[in-house]
View 1 (cartoon, chains in turn cyan, green):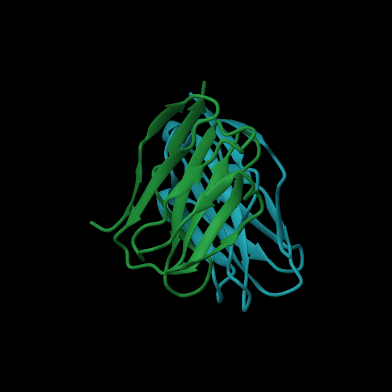
View 2 (tube, rainbow over the protein chains, first blue to last red):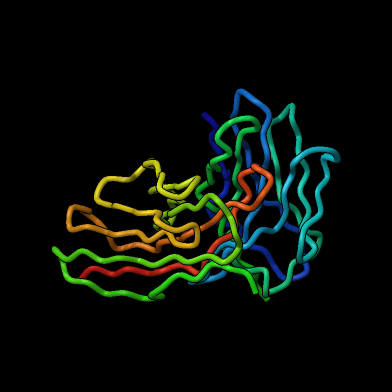
Length: 114
Length: 113
């Protein structure tokens, strides 16, 4: 079975600074990887996904992530954050050829300060 | 526009009462899910359904029940057997392609008084 670890529960950063939110996964088979964003009292919205092909994936709102198979990681990055990026971010993994039921990490709260 | 509608958005109930959360989708997706979200614990799977008239328990199914009589609808009942039901509940459906990519509703916040 797969598992996901988000290494930071909270990441404070100043506006216009770069940010990286870390995600590591564990699986015995090939995987699909996802990042979602959640604003307060709302559902989750897909930011980006890795299915196959290029390991650098670009998503909405200027975010990107890189799939690193050898390190089993899928870290999310943004070169310059805005106040509006303050939200909860979830990493998720599902197994190829399996049930496709995704497993979510515990989330990272990104707090952008002016 | 296609999407998932969860209702009610906020719900209060007294201990010992059952409550049903509605989830309706017009995306024509086959698979639907219910997750529970508590602060610092991420999303935990309660039940999922991959086709009509079939559903499976997730990791924390005790105290919950579901039905899937129509493709569009996947209601969740929180029963009085659920020991700590106060939480944010999220319904989702799986996009086509069998990758595990989910589309979420806006959530329902249940508070037990």
